[in-house]
Amino acid sequence: MVRNYERWTREKVIERIKEMNSLEINILSLKDSTEFDRFVVSAGRKHFGSWGDSVISAGFPYKKRPK
Image (cartoon, rainbow, N blue to C red; front, side, top):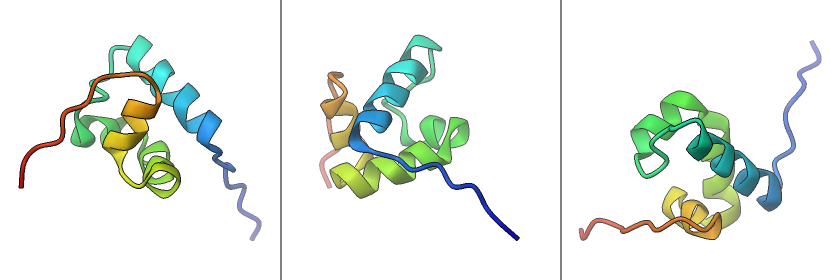
């Protein structure tokens, strides 16, 4: 079986986050973002360290919750 996996780059992650925002997906919500596109969330974590850092890199404000 051959699987076609999307190769995510930092640029593709940022592009997808901007696209999700334009579709009015709540990109500040990890839950909503994951429900819409779990693959970009996973790629964002891989390339930027966290979903929040991915959102910030795409140019959006993101406040991390205190632990």
